Image (cartoon, rainbow over all chains, first blue to last red; front, side, top):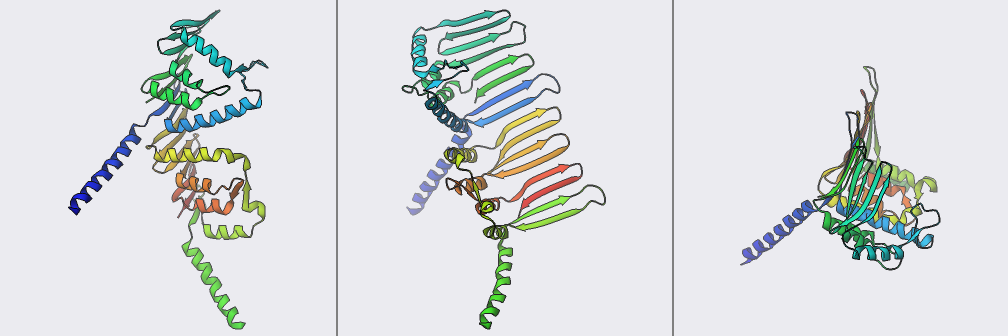
Length: 189
Length: 172
């Protein structure tokens, strides 16, 4: 009887340990690759456990909240004194979100072209210099923007956005940019 | 009185010897290039360094960095996450004949830099970093705690090579 109990405890412990190890192995990682063409071109590879990126996101959120409380709760995207209120951004997003699939912005300026559109559950940003070399595509799941703006008032929720990105982008590419000789890829796997 | 003095004189070297024998040592190994190059090995007992710091001026005993207080919980979480993560390359940069590699190997973060001339290998034990973080009192660090944390490392922690010249620091 005692032996059976001991065996059961040992089995349970083994299951817990192997389960933990499996969970650790299955934990997603964020991968970034920057590749420059040519023999002497730089090659940068960054691989980080997503849980580590979550800590960075918490720090970023803290810093942004400090910034917001410091200058009248506005995010300043290099617009001199014309910052954007998070509440305004949230309202605008609610309108856009409800609009369904559509091209929101399309700019053609000489040989430069930028388009921001909604396609199903993703916001797609495409840019192209029309020289055959410089083009890129960034796909942001709608759930990520929902999560980013899920706070109240002047709060943005970076951690929630990252969590949404992880759950919606695992296995898929988040960013792909080809700019002349340089290629940038970001994905979670 | 004479008896007390005799006991004291006998005990002092014994305590000193005990400290030396029980100590972790940082071994600094410098090898010059060429057939006549010097080879210097300096063993530094870390417990003696800590003891010496007790008599050092206040500014050498304590490093004040109150500005990092708010980030310490995050850094501690980063270290915990890295400890739990599986081994692998975290960062790799190649540019011409220069390379930088940061990888997790067991409970250590290893940094390898090769700029074509110098090769630098640094091993940072995560336990030692955690120990340093936990020694932070909200205002700064006691340098004796930093020395104790260095003692938690084992093996090579720094290795710099340039041609046939090299410097090694290892904890023994």
